[in-house]
Length: 489
Image (cartoon, rainbow, N blue to C red; front, top):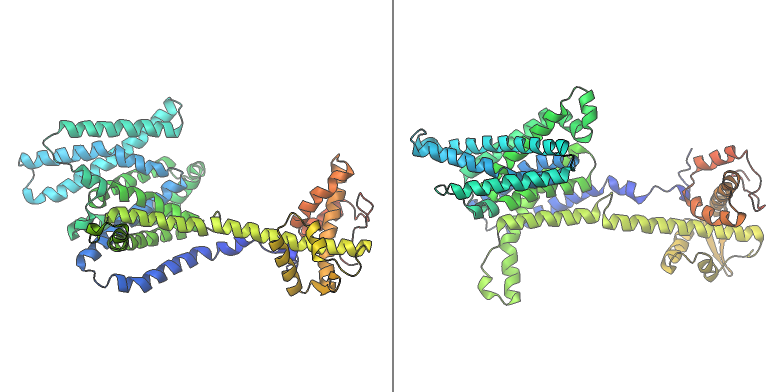
């Protein structure tokens, strides 16, 4: 059994942070918004709130399929679908315009009919795009990214040709690219609410099927789940969401919301349920922060740069929301419990500190064993014998050892306490057992054993230590003739 009091058995920082970084990050974000928002939004009117709500629903609608695309390693499929659905969009617009001009469709029904045809056209082209990619990949035996590129460029080019040929229809490409979120209306918000609700209910209704098909399609098939159907349903959901959001918030924001909140939540948690919930919260936060920055940042920056004429200007809200999403991703990248930059640095630093502490204990024990420094070892001597660790790490290691009661200071230097000697004995026992194990199982010269054991000893827990002793039949001495201490000595 592991000894929980041993410094050689301290849990790594990664495990400790995994359970707290994600919720703390979300709580801090909500707290900052709760504190800052009342002051910053005090002058907002219903138009500002409508812009934020529209952006939030667009972000949440996109983040749901974005999570499953990320898990399937197909995040760029969303970007591709945003271009490949162009023929379906153009065909839907042409058909709806034809229906209106031929009086086949009443004028009062044009708006909802156009939305319906756009939805159907996007679904159809999204599924066709997925089928074409699989067909090219299977028959042409090319990699998935190449098949994606072929279908993406071809269908997008077909859509552009259709736009040029149909000169009598109006498709505002700036609106498609940048969106029209600044002029958001209730009628523009309703389709986003509908598609978000639909995506949410489909995800909750087929949660198990989507989860298994995303992580292991082969397992899903053996369990009776049609993994291909789940794939096509996800592509259809993505395509429909993209098309309904394009006209309202623009492709830049749609693609950003499809990928960035999912990637951010993936950095913060490994569980699918919390990942989905977190991506929705991040979508809401992105909409609020994006609109705030679009209003606040230009007046705060441009006058200082000498652009007084732009002091009253405002940035693109859709672009600002995309930038806010990227900013939240950077924060998650720094604080991620698994591969965050700061977390990784702290983990390596804490490991260096633990190894330095154990090296000090080992040096002091060997010094007592050989009576080379019976009254203690000076800091300078310890620094020379643990030269791989920086002076700052060694100083902190000595301070921590004194605080834990493992060493004491004497006029001659540092010596072990009874508790410190017990800990050092475990470390030296692990070192010499590993030397004995290597000597017995590997053809290595004796002068090659110590350096390897010096590194491995820090990662041998009590269970492995006793397993080595049992394997070696409780050896008394190591290959160098030094006595192997026992725990009950």
